[in-house]
Length: 108
Image (cartoon, rainbow, N blue to C red; front, side):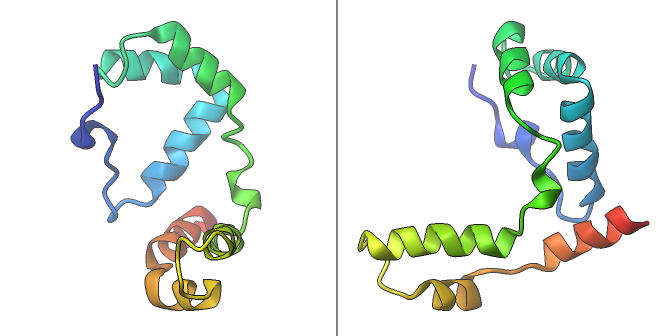
């Protein structure tokens, strides 16, 4: 069963929902896996639980998203997949409003 976009979508107006979801995945992977099964996102509880146990959901706050985009943009530029420089891609095609809203919500 393929997940639907509606089941996976997170509204941009509620950035705290992402934070709560990631915290749940980190603190209770078994419970999060059961929620995925109950909502029909996946049919296999054992696969979902294994994936959640092996993925580090608790360290995402340590990464700088702009550095991540820069890293991958540089790889794409070096491979010749994109012609624009990584700095141009970041300047023209990134919008950090959503992330800034999430950071503000996390502080409160």
